[in-house]
Length: 68
Image (cartoon, rainbow, N blue to C red; front, side, top):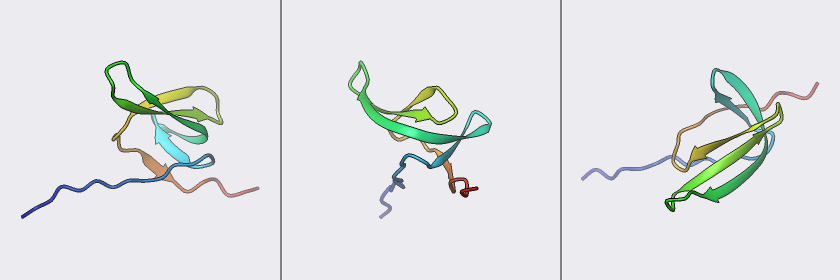
């Protein structure tokens, strides 16, 4: 018997996410309830702006930039 599984990751400020062909650094994270009752995660970026991802989306994470 096969049981479907999902991989969960904890994302925190300072983590780096690959999105739209570039790496962006997470500044802040907020969860929101969408109009039809679904859940989403909103990321604010150190580079400016913010983006919303439906809960369950897969994200490409990288190690944070080393301190200079």
